[in-house]
Amino acid sequence: MPDIRPPRPTQPDNAPPPGKRCPRCRVVLEHERSYVAKGLTGVPSFEHRFVCPACDTHYRWSSRDQRWREVH
Ligand SMILES: [Zn+2]
Image 1 (cartoon, rainbow, N blue to C red):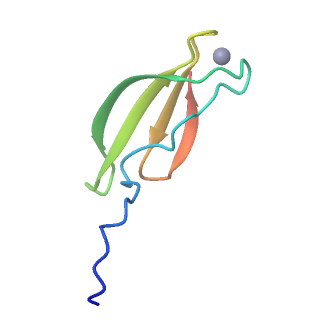
Image 2 (cartoon, rainbow, N blue to C red):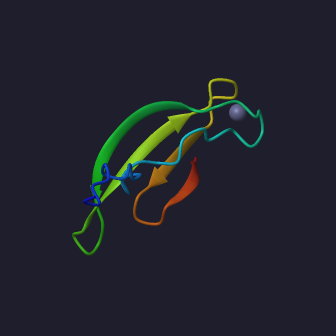
């Protein structure tokens, strides 16, 4: 039997982990927009903006550092 397996569904590194919740309201954030940002090195990174529908706080996720940041 040839070892043929379907391609493993991998999380693209430009997508944020799903189900991020507002640390204050415990509400799932709503996706606002995505864009490509070029850093100082010229290497593009994928940025995603989210907003909490309850308290209207904005959050940003960057593929560069793979972290959520609150946007002030
Ligand atoms: Zn909130």
